[in-house]
Length: 349
Image (cartoon, rainbow, N blue to C red; front, side, top):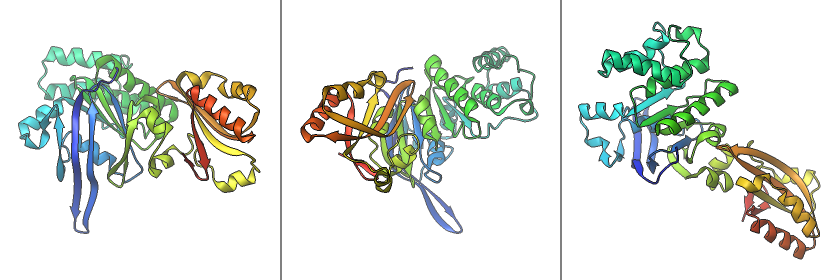
C-alpha cells in the first residue's frame, strides 16, 4: 500500500520512567513523531534504546509517564478501560517468541481470540480459515505449534493478529528468532498484508536489513530518545547521527578508517558516491571516466535493495588535474549521483 500523508497516530513528547527499589530508569524521553496511515514504519535502535517500550505505549499496554499519544486525534490518556479495549481491537501485535498456545491447534490459536472478541461461530470459522490461508498455512489447521518451524509459528501469530481486521499491526522484534530465509519470508508476508489489507505497520527491530527490506520511513532511537527520522532513502543516503551510521556499518562502506586508507596507499581525493533508483543500474562512473581525464581507484563498494529499489554505494579515490576532477564530480551530480568528500572515519560535505 502506498503511504499517505494522513496522520494516524501522533506521539507528543512521550516519556516513560520505570521505578524499582534500585531507582528510576528513563526508558523513553521526549519522543515525538507521527505515524502515517498505510505506511510501514521501522523503529530501530540498539539494545536498551527503548524500542519495545515505545511499541507497547502505542496500544497503552504501557502507559506513558509524560507526554501524550493520539489515535486519529483522540488522546489515549483520556480513554477508560472500555475505550482502551476498543482501541486495542483496532490493533494487532506480534512478538519475537510468537506467544502461541502450545496445547491448541493452529486453527484454535487463531479462533480463540476471535471468540473472546465476540465474533459469531460462523464468522470465527470463516475468518480463521481465511487468514490462515492468507499466511500460507491452509494445510496446517490441525497441527500444533511444536510441529511447526519458527517461520510457520510466526505466520500463525500474524494470522491471529490480523484475523479480527485491525487497522494497525505492531511487530516487536518479529524476525529476531528466525533464520535469514524465514526472516525474508516473514518480511515479504508483512509487506503483503500492508499492501492487500491497507494495514499500517510499525516494526521494531535492531537490524537495518529488516528496515531496508520493507519500511517506508525509519525512526532511530538511542537511550530512549528519537535521534533521527526520515524516509528510507534519506536515512541511508545521508545519515545524520552517529548511532544511525553505526547501525548502517557493514551494509554500506561508510566506516573506513584513515589508517586503512593509508595502508592502501591511496593517492588522490576520496569521495563517497551514492546511486539510488534507476541510476544504480547504469554505467555512470565508466561514462564519467571516458569524458574526463581522471582515474578512479574503487576502495569499497556495495549494492543493496531498499524496499526492492537498487541502492549502490562507492568509495572512490579520484586522481588527475583538479579541474578535471571538478568536472567529473559536476557531471556525476547532473546524473543524479549523490557525492560527498570523504574525510577520515566519516564522510564530510
